[in-house]
Length: 550
Image 1 (cartoon, rainbow, N blue to C red):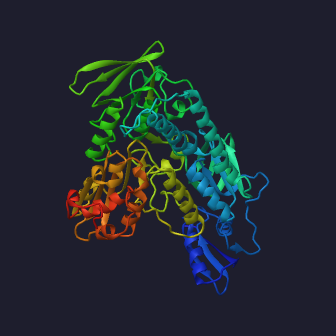
Image 2: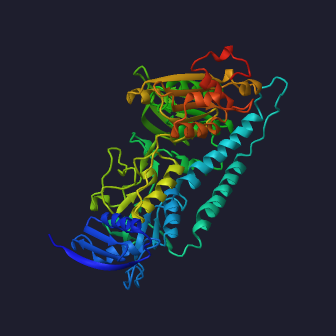
Image 3: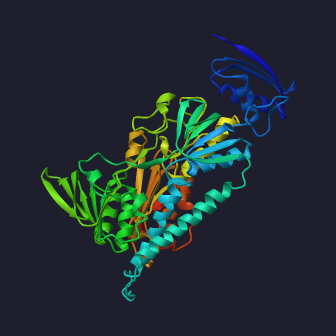
C-alpha cells in the first residue's frame, strides 16, 4: 500500500476540541490513514494513500470549514474553468436549498445542479403549496353550501374554476421567487446550473458535456409519481399532480388511481370544486398505512360528500375512447368490469425516487430494495464523500424533514459534526377534511416493538369545543407505555386536527407522561382540551365527567 505524509500549519484553532474536530473531518476521507492535529503547535500531520486522495483534497477539506485554514497553501477551487467546488448539490428542492444556505454560512464554494422541476422542487411547484391552496379554496366552497346549524342556510357558491387555478399559479410563482430564488440571490459562493447531472466517478459529475468536480456531493433529487405498468396506460392522456394542478379548464370528472394521502387530498379538493370524483384503490381501504378506524372515518365522510370509492379494485387495462377512457378492472369477487371515465384519469399510486439518470452504477452507490438511496441517520451513504437527503432517500418524505436533512448533511460533511435525524416523534398531517395527524407509534407499531401499551380513544362527541361547533367528526387517540405512563404515540382525526399534533409530538419527544397531560391546563372550548380529556379517559369514562373535569 502506497502512503505519503504531509505536515500543514493551521490557523483558526482555539482549543483542543478544534483539533479533534479537524481530525474527525479528515477521517471521513477514506484515503486518509491517520491524522494528528495539535492545537498548541497549530499543525496537522496527515498520512494518506495517494491512490485514493491527494494533498490538495486534504487542504481543501480544511479550508472549506468556517474557521480553519491551511497557512501558505492555496486550494484549487478558483481555477480558470470554474469547475472545482467544495460541494456539489444535485437537485433544487427543499433539501438542496437548505444545504446551500448552510454551505454559504460555512464559506463553501457550492454548485447546485437542477434538472426537471424548476428550482424549489416538488413542494412549492407541484406539491404542498398548490395542493393546500386548492384545498383551502375547496373548503371555502364547501362551507358556502353546507352548514352545521339549522338556523344557518347557505345560499350556494359561484366557482370560477379557471380563476382559482390562475391564483394558484400566481401564488406558486411568488413563493418560488421569494422563498427560494431571492433567498440565495446574494450568496457569494453559490453557482446555480440548470441541467442533468451524471456521475463519472465519485468526485466528478458531467452536465451537458462539461465535467465538474467537488470534495463532497449531496444528492437531493427528490421523487416523482410512480407510474404503474398497466396495459394501455401510456395511450391515454392521464394526469399526475404535476399536470392536474395546472389544468385551468374544469374536468367533467376525475378517476383517481390510488387512495394514499395524495389521492385523497386531490379527491376532496376537486370534488368540492364541483368535479365528480371516483377513487380506485387496489387495497381494501383508503390510507392503508393508518389504522382501520381512521380509514373508516375518512371513507364515511368522503362517501357522504358524493365521492365514489372502489376498494379492492385493480385496473388491468386502459383504452382511449374519444376524449375519455375505458378502465378495465378486476373486481373484489374476481370478476371483471369496465369503468367509463369521460373526464380525466389521475395517477396517484405513490412515488419513486429520482435516481435513474444519475449514473449511480458508475460509483457503486448503495440503494434500498425500493430504489431509494440508503442513508444512515447522519445522511451518509456507503461512499464517504457522498451524502443524500430528502425524498430520494429512505427517510420520511416531508418537506420539513428534507430541509433538516440537507442542513445536517452539510454540517456533518464539512464541520466534523455528527448530527443525526431522529424521527421517533415526527409529526405529520394529511390535509383532508377532517384532517388526519399523527406522531410516534400506532398500536400495530407498538406491538411489533414488544412495548406494553394502552390506548385511549376519545370521540369528538365528548369534546365541548366540537359539541358547541356542531361538528363532532373524528376522534383523538393516545397510546401510552403502561410501564412508564409515557406517551408513545398519538393519532388525531378532526377538523383542523393538524393543529393539535405538534404538542403531542413534543410530549413524545420529551417523555411527558399521560398524567402530566391530564394535569395540565387547557383553555376551555378549544379542541386542544380534547387532549386532556383523552388523557383522563385512560382511567375514567369521559361521559361521566363534567365540563370542568380535572
